[in-house]
Length: 273
Figure 1: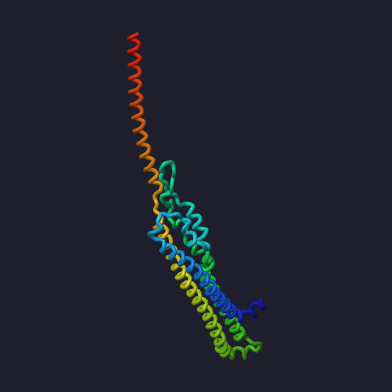
Figure 2: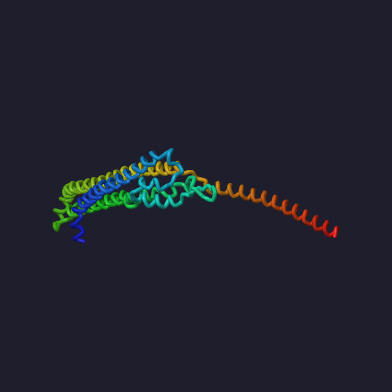
């Protein structure tokens, strides 16, 4: 217990150093990761914008250089596998006319994989709560330190008469260190809360900017490849089925006509015989 009481004066200062260190680490690491993600998304957006109009529906392998860096490379490889080649049968050959998307780009290019993961946002979003908690601990440590010193200041002496006469003076003289400790504790707490607010403001602002870039990237990819491959194939299947029915009906009529003619000829020959 005495060891803990001896540490009370240093706890607020240590917590202030920890809060400052965590905030500095956040500013350095988070901003660097943000710049890397922003550059990757920005380059991909510029590359796709340059392909608009003259690349719509074409081979997705032509876009591989745009998504050459991770994590875009892995996601693009997965998305390109979902693109469906539309073929047109001509003289036994099946050339690819265009590629159609079978799912929206936002299903693959998610904010979790392009923003939250690279930024390590699952930790940073809890950092403000950690900083606030450290500030509260510093406040309680400062209050306990001040109360401990105040208790020592007003502790009664062995002389009861002298203690009674000097009790008021001791209480007044002990209020100064108590107020200083309380003020220092609240300053530490205010600094921690300020750092927490700074972390929230910067992180949410930068994450929102990256999320808008991801949405723009998905819109560009969707504009390059039309959807609805399944509907077109279903329409072809219906048309093919209708044509088959017509051909089957014509074949049936031809077979019935031929069979009637054959039976008529056989009957005539039997009568003549």
